[in-house]
Length: 476
Image 1: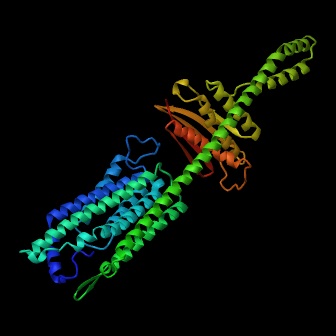
Image 2 (image 1 turned 120 degrees about the vertical axis):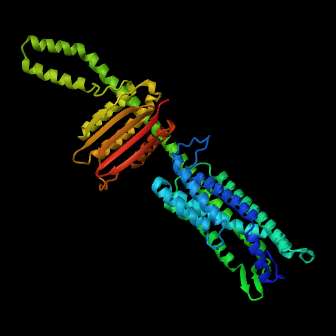
């Protein structure tokens, strides 16, 4: 930076600088601002990755363990403090972030690796861009830093004090600009979203551009010569306003990219919500049709029961044993069609699960069920019916194309949660296309939405020819 000006000998300034660099007060100030930057890193990281629990957080994220996060904070704090005592052009802070956060995420939160990489590159971009803004904003102070040196009795003390004041101002301005930039990002990021690889490449382009530009400009900003140093901003004063403008434009471009990414996700979620609501309505219509069909069968059997009894008595009295056996067999099949294979304790879930039994039987799939339902859970029978229906529809559809054709479904009550577990045989190499693929995917999305509604989660696993879905719902 152009701190010292052109009119003072290089060796004298260097001698004074050594005294200044060893100043305990400046070291303490540097450590304080380093810890403030650490806080900003954690705050920015928490905008994209569930790291630190907020008291009003209601997004259902699975937060990292407190002791693991505390260990990361301690390690980063030590590195940040040590970096305050180092004089090097290497981006020690950024290297530390990549060297600590990324390994931590790889071992403890693999689902958030891309988001963590983006957070670090974004922070690096913000600190890089802040450099240009701060240098230009403090240019007037740096140019007038040595005014009055001719009248000073102790030149070394005079220079040391002035440089110390300038460094404090510089640290403060740098921290304020970085904080303002991070607050702006936080205002845009309303909800945490998963970042896919293509999205990371799109979002990181401007970050990379800002970082590279800063590296190049800092490397050529001051060039040493025999008489002292050539300061680029003094040779080209227009750079003092051009570089900050470029920096701000790159930062605004990154903000726009983040905003577009968030809006695109909101639009996608609204579209999915519309489709899932439509699917829910169709599911409700299907439940009503199933119920109507079931009770129609019951009404028919009850209506014809008197006739059946008369026919049975007539066949028995006339000794038509063969005809009687055939008649009773047919009657038993009619009664079995309305017989509940499973009784869950609720008519809605009974209808859903027994309808899937009939579908599995037609598809040649062996369906085993172990479940019940209690109103005390506080979970709507309609919601649990949608979960059961969509999961079993998916399981039966996939198991139909396997050799074993097995589906296992159960609901377990554990303390304050209800666990819905389903496993079925699965052919991963099967390249068939379902005409209802879109609805099939939305069905599972609907299950996930219901799980989130009950402060739970859905998990899907595919391995070794088996497909498993587990849904956790919290009691109310």
